[in-house]
Length: 206
Image: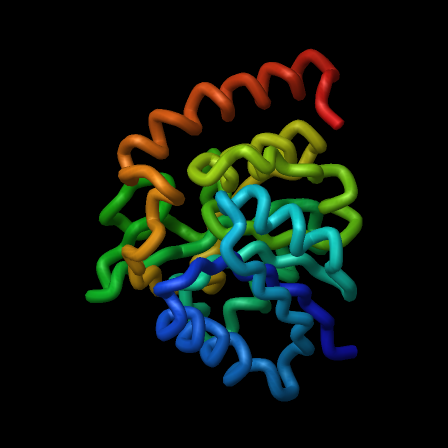
C-alpha cells in the first residue's frame, strides 16, 4: 500500500519562490511512491509553533516536519519509513546548495548510514511515535528539532543517520531569525530549550 505522509512546512512572507521549489520537489516524487497531505503553515512566530499546529491536522501513516528551504532528494522517504517502522528516528543527510555535506555528526563529512547521532534536523516519525513525542515547545524557533529529538529519545526512539534520507538546504534568508538576528534568536531560544528539557525530565511537560 502506498504510504500517506503528512508534510508540515512552515513559511513566512518573502520566501514564496523557495516554498514553491520545495513543494515541487516533494510532489514530483510522489506519484506511485507515496501520497502527500501537505500542510503549509504561514507566518507563525517560530518553527515550533508552526510544526505543532500542522501536526494537529496530520493524517495518514507518517508525520514529516519539514522546512520551506530544504528540498528532498529522490527516494528520501524509503529509509525514513524503514527507520521509523523499526522504532528509530531518522536523521537526514543534508547538503548545502553547492553539494557540500552539512550534517551530523560532523559538519563537512559524510558519516556511515546508521550512525547514531544526537538529533534529527528534519524530523520524520510514525503517527504512533508522534503521540509520544508531542507536543513541541511552541516558543522555540531554533532548537525545535533538538527538542523533538530529545523527546523522541526519552520515549525510547534512538536517532540514527540515514544517508538516503537526503535533502539540499538552500539557506533562504528572509525571516531566518524570526524577528531577530539569527544569532540573537539562537541566544533567545537556548534558555527556553533548556527549561523545556528540564521540565520533561521532571515529568512536568504537557
